[in-house]
Length: 417
Ligand SMILES: Cc1cc2nc3c(=O)[nH]c(=O)nc-3n(C[C@H](O)[C@H](O)[C@H](O)COP(=O)(O)OP(=O)(O)OC[C@H]3O[C@@H](n4cnc5c(N)ncnc54)[C@H](O)[C@@H]3O)c2cc1C
Image (cartoon, rainbow, N blue to C red; front, side, top):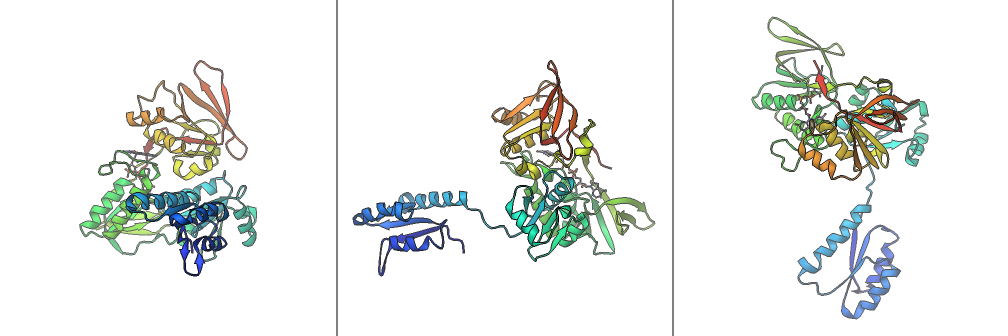
């Protein structure tokens, strides 16, 4: 059992409080300790600060408790919480940080709101001992360790989806409405369809939430005055849609739609057919790709479209680069600045004012580890297996070659139809 705090009276029958706190140290070394004392016990309490690493001694009486007891307990519990690392019981994903396959799996788990622990084989001792235990070779990575003892080596997304219980086959012969795409538009349609009692099917090729699901903080969504993360918005919306009776399939891609006499036929990428009376296409947009030498080859291996929330931890204490001057780039910069040493935003124009909301510009200006490089364009990226260098042309300067491990691209979108 985990115990955060022991509070003991100094005067107890059979044992002194200090002795008790000394004894529990062996079993709960990380628990905080408070000794309750009377005026006459003060010397014992002061001695206990060193002897039993006492965190606080509290003199009786503590009236009023709102003033003299509760704030102290709160403060000590907060302090304990900061250093407390709960043992992780969910899925453990082990792999090399800078590979496309690792990134795809992280992105898929995060998008589908499945908690997981990422362990970098090059840095984490736990990863090394787990692969030894599971008889996994490096060529089998990325590998997933599940709580029931099963291990998936280099799984496809469909294998992974089956293992974690995502639904990819429809349960009904005919639907009233089928919605293709589970971004905010598709999710809203599913909520309304299901709430009207229609047999409603929602399909997404990746995960619920769409682009909005990858946003670190949405501040202009009605009804959330302090903003909401994309994943939390998604969690709420998909829960609402399913509670009202909508069925959700993922990862399932629609590749063809045919009009039949009395119904519409939807063909999925695995060849199965779904019959429906009506279809709502809410396939949204896809990221516009940066057509610069080297980008395509290194996408997923240090270069990402979106994905700031998935890869932020890996950028810890690194220099991170963002291309783009829109709101999604601004949100990503704010989010990554909490992890990275420095965040540089590269834009071709001379200011963010043409493309970014004022509230984000102000947040960026007030963040000391974000810098803006204006009139800058990437001319090439290079790296053997992962991103290593960004070549940059900046107006009025010689061409610059920057050493870089992470580049996030937000240069707009194009319709995904
Ligand atoms: C990082 C980021 C931050 C953002 N922040 C904000 C913000 O703060 N405020 C704001 O107003 N807007 C923001 N946006 C924009 C907002 O997210 C989009 O306008 C919104 O997500 C569009 O919703 P949608 O449902 O139309 O499409 P999308 O969100 O694009 O969803 C479309 C879905 O369709 C699925 N799909 C596509 N084709 C198929 C197929 N053939 N079969 C099955 N599924 C398919 C896709 O996988 C996707 O999940 C942000 C966007 C990004 C990327």
